[in-house]
Amino acid sequence: MLTPAQRHFQSVSARHRGLSDAVHHNTAYEQQLHRLRLDQSRLHEIQSDQSKALLKRDLLPHYQGWIDGAIAADTGQADEVLVTMMVWSIDVGDISGALRIGDYVIRHGLPMPDRYKRTAATAMVDEICDPVLAAFKADAARAPLDVALLLQLNALTAGADMPDMVRAKLYKSIGYTLRLSPNELPAAREWLQRAIALFDGIGVKRDIEILGRAIKKAALAAGTDDGDVSGINQGAEPETGSDAAEPEGATPAPVPVKPVRQTRSSRAGVARKTRTNKGTRGKRAV
Image (cartoon, rainbow, N blue to C red; front, side):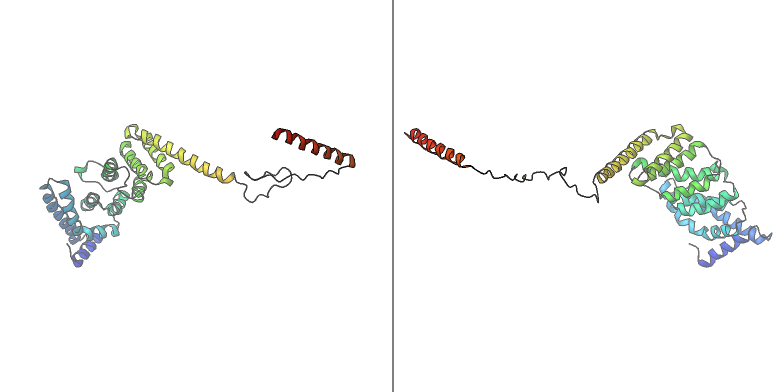
């Protein structure tokens, strides 16, 4: 680990590199390059990728002053140390730090070391998206990387030339990450459609179909809910008059009956009928 003074010296040396022809500043870069060669030799002795990543995590702070100074100077000089630190940052999971360096590297068109055999933009997309897609294959319900970082990578590399298959991997990574958010399903499908348009073998056809059904189902559910609400006449005046419907199960009100006025002859007839009924009941009782 560098002391603050050593880090400051690195930063100043990197800022002045290219701004002066002094031998001191060229020597400072050579010192960083020599340190890099020694550290790479240590890494070559390790076979485990995880162990290599752990060592890179320990070594990265030794170069932080140089990274800060080179980016601040913004001279655009070829810098093997800087581009190597970009890749190391990806290897240790510091994607934010890698994007910071990558912005400088891609903007100035810095060459990558021959061993990478790719441009900086292609290398960044490959090295970032391959682990993301591998993680989704292991657990499709868990995003290994914040979508904001993937979108930043897309913006950073949008104007760069790279194989369609590589860019399709970036689009697929964005689509897979967005589909974990229910409100982002249409956007997720759009990114996957862009991926398959670039490279038919990217492997997202079924994902697009599943997303389409999920989007349709969500739209139908939203439409049903709206229908339930709209079916209620909120604020409507209650119906009145003869057309108003009675509440279900209510007992109908009795119809008033107009009393009938009996005449003298009708009262006599009723009396005779009563006597006749009494006689009949007496005979049935026997």
